[in-house]
Image (cartoon, rainbow, N blue to C red; front, side):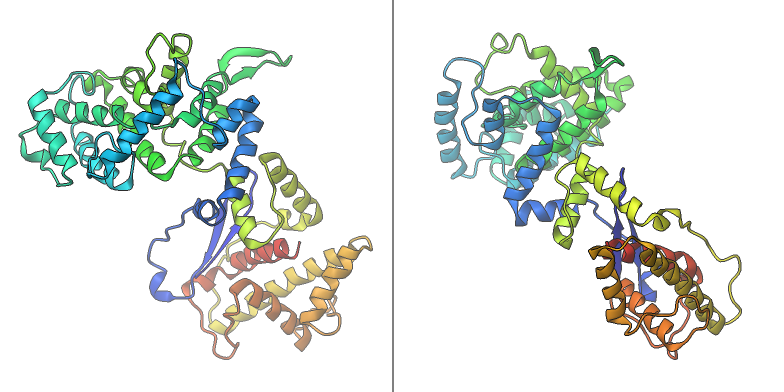
Length: 457
């Protein structure tokens, strides 16, 4: 199976060519962020520089705040001696982690696996009135806490525990983490996101939040979170989103939930409400926004996906959203016929495999002639000569594009294109058979030519 992604100004699409008939009825699973995650793990420095450069395009971060985000300096937090207090507190957490304690220990995937039992249970009890607001029973809370700390599975569905017990325990777990789920390094960046406002026609800021830029900034910031933090944040925000959808029964709106969780998600540790007095409304509204738009926040922006894909394909890699749009514009200008071609489906199926092959072959060669003619009409330049050499390399002698006969040269030339498109999996014409996918030959030939032309560029 070959997957060919195509760049777009808004999103990515892909063409899947499956050569195994037994797999064609199976669903195709495609992770659009695959190359983003690959870049994060294989070249974290490039990944971080890419994301941060786009964050600074959206947020006005002073030098100190930017250095905090990059991890170059210790975060300067509200409240007296906050940094020193967090340092000694972190030492205690590390000591406790050695004993296998979940609560109060630094966040790990193993800890998330334990806490997921609580999240899974709460998804089944979203209609409980006052969920996350009404405290649970202290005795049952201690039993649950001890079970989770010991690393054992707990039977929360046994009826022994109430949903309010489980909801309270989840908040306790978050409250005892060494730092908030969004981390101390990101604190000042989130304050800046709350200040992103729309501009009027005269370029003056209005009082209306710029939701699109806020979503984009959050998507980028979430990419910089440590994997355990990002995974748990996704699970938590999805739970709160589903809870808010049932507010007619549980009386817990997104804003009410934000009041409960903002201290655990974004507030710096060891600070009081007085320390955050001027920022509390911003932080609470920020968490409310995250809950309402949680289904969009864990997808990488389209230009980040495209950068990562081009990075591994060895092609030109745009550094930002603006560069990507410029690259797409240049591609359309150089090969305008690619944009103008429309998808088409055959009105009726040929009566035999031979006629199908001939029709597909003819359409392929027609498109090839159009491609070659466009290159031939380009102004004389080094780039034009390079493209002509690529054609001649696979077909000695310039093919006669004015002839409509299927002579040896044109078949050889089209064969070169097919080898590029199908990855060398070209079967001789004598042995070829029609598959269900070949009934749409015209459409796939044109789409595959788009891919070849983009590669030639």
